[in-house]
Image 1 (cartoon, rainbow, N blue to C red):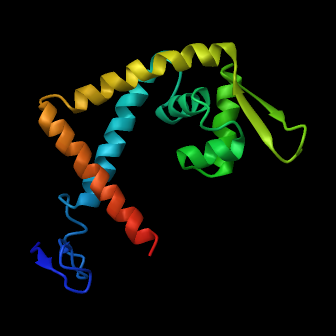
Image 2 (image 1 turned 120 degrees about the vertical axis):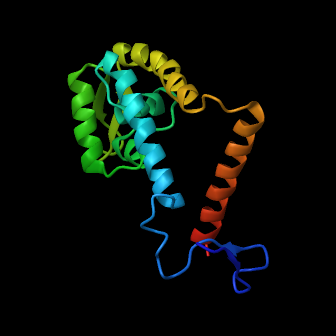
Length: 167
């Protein structure tokens, strides 16, 4: 893969990939590496949360609800990036485990509210330390400076994606 300047996109844009897609199937592709990193982190969070009978997405959902970022089925689905059907199935499992309760909104019967049970609040308190253990394992060997650079690079990568999606 040869990087080159693209004057059409601006002087500060270097093309690392071209339309021939030869690098996209490569295991060194940024997209592939991000996907793989995400899969491995989630797999390791799954392993940590097995103690509580939770998967990584279920644990993350409990955190989202506990922090007040979502309180409806639709809001939960939007917050963790799944469709409402998948969210309903996940909530069914969490309800069976005694971690959440659902109820119809009094103001709009189409809306289904979601809240944590007492057991849900208790387990949600334990999830952050487990996620921290996993992330710290993945960051083993990074210096503080490398950690800061890594976060800065990810923020820039995300910002570039947000910029291009608003065009």
